[in-house]
Image 1 (cartoon, rainbow, N blue to C red):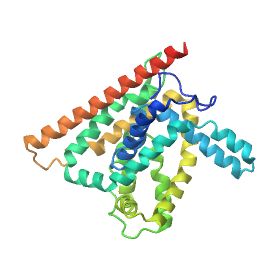
Image 2 (cartoon, helix red, strand yellow):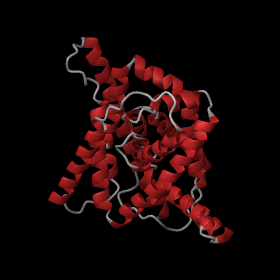
Image 3 (cartoon, rainbow, N blue to C red):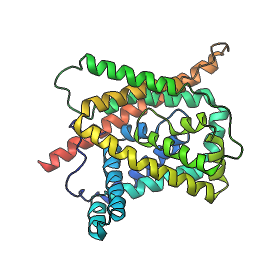
Length: 315
């Protein structure tokens, strides 16, 4: 999240990021990558919460434009001009952190979610519940939201609520690589749109377990096709979201908040109402829920203080 100003997609080259932030950015990237492994949790939601969403989106936009410049015959000058706009001191640590989380924790996270499902869901429910405020803090609110924004929030809520209810027909044992390509192009949207989980979309398409297995076994053919599909989807969705943030920022952030609220359906720990739970089954998820909520509140306070300190330095 940023200081409460309307986001803009373009601007001067980014200021040199202090190297002292390197460990923090690695940790943020690790957290984003970790959450992408959990069905029902969107990495972009965590990017919003830890204060990196607009920076990552702008940098991704310039990387996409650099590639398009070469394809259109714009030459190396346009390519270099776009890449100069990328905040590499932020992007590289975040990507390294995300990659490290995926490579190191794909197996353990799957085991954790399977072994302690209620506590894991409680933790992420608390994170996303309080994190709904993150996109709303990206713009100034001089007047209360009107009926149109309330309806848009409801539309986002219903959309995510329905998407998280998709069950999927079971894992595909030997998916065709073209299907893998298309699935990656769709799932990568979750990296940009808060409230939509890439892992949950893969789960609904029957490719969640095969993808984790491919990463664990270093199946480079599968991984390469998946990466190509993800890159294709990323090119389209980045520009769409950036334009929306530029032209209709309030509508965009309200829709994001609605999507995040609707996605809570997938994270509610006690989804099987026919089951009886002991006191221990209830207390542990509640404690993790409170811990997740407290973590987000801490990150919001830290982000607000950091933004204020940066403004004071500029003055």
